[in-house]
Length: 124
Image 1: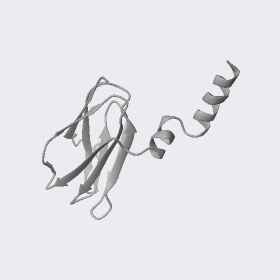
Image 2 (image 1 turned 30 degrees about the vertical axis):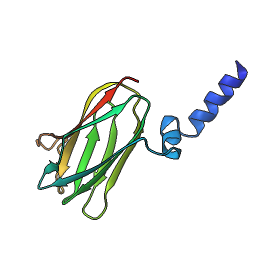
Image 3 (image 1 turned 90 degrees about the vertical axis):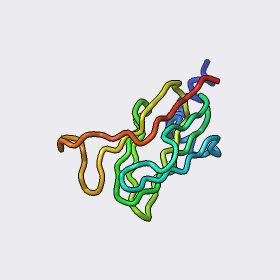
Image 4 (image 1 turned 120 degrees about the horizontal axis):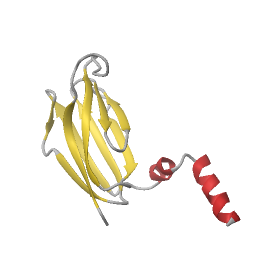
């Protein structure tokens, strides 16, 4: 029991699940391009529970992204892509929304969210 407590303490000190995800090679990678405020290509990305996922975002203007359900946030700029990296621990369908284009931010500004992608996580 003591060794479990020590292992759990070490796990939390190292940053929890995201620290371990950062050390592992991604199992599922999506190269995503936003052009003229829309996603080029398919708007659904399917993965399996337990996989390490990377969503790599490129854009033609500054954009703030939010993966709902996992609460992963990223900000991409032209010439400075953003990466959302996480372990797919919860099954279901989760939207990735844009909270702002350019210098505008939708929280409190009256602008609506726009869904760019749906992440579908299937059971093992």
